[in-house]
Image 1 (tube, one colour):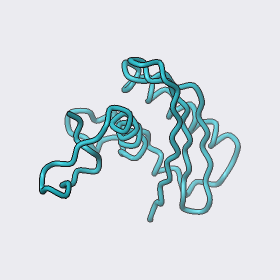
Image 2: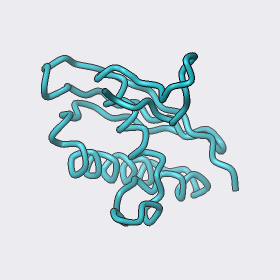
Image 3: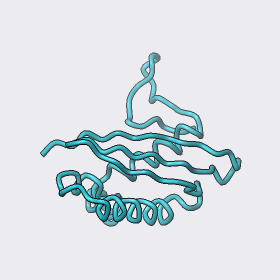
Image 4: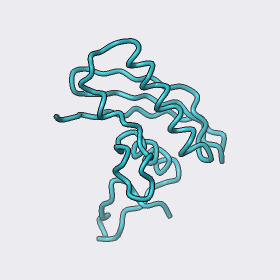
Length: 120
């Protein structure tokens, strides 16, 4: 059983569940949009992505984001996924992250796109 993220109740009033593939996607999303220091017992979990959205746009910033996200996914989810590709872009206060990955247990290739609207 995998608990769906974000936590909510299903139509029967029970904790909503999700498939293995959706759970993996949820774990990637949690890593991307968690701020370092936000989790008490894992203070270095998270990408820090939201802190950089208002920085001046540059190729160096996008490269740094890709490197940081890639390293974080390898550290925290390496036993679950193998990251095959990563793209980061932004438009004003919205960040877009596309991740191509292989699920280690099944060797099935997946891709997911995440969008984060950041408010000051």
